Length: 78
Image 1 (cartoon, one colour):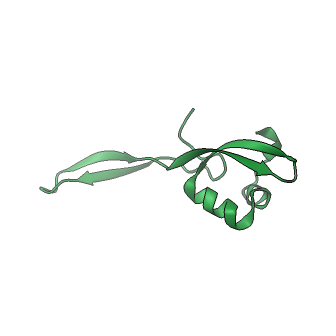
Image 2 (cartoon, rainbow, N blue to C red; image 1 turned 90 degrees about the vertical axis):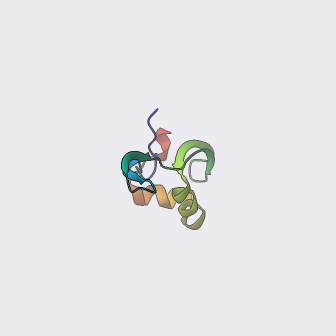
């Protein structure tokens, strides 16, 4: 399974690691993904999702159904 948030689509970012002598090497900045079991009130069931921590904060603020609807995601497929 790839490291992609199932709600927002966030994925790894290419960056540079800069040493003290300013030698730049490529590094991969991964997304902070968490496997979570979230209650979906409209479907009356638990949904297992692999989501980023930023998406979890948004879900706490807006609610799972509203956030998924905003992102254009059908939770019945999970």
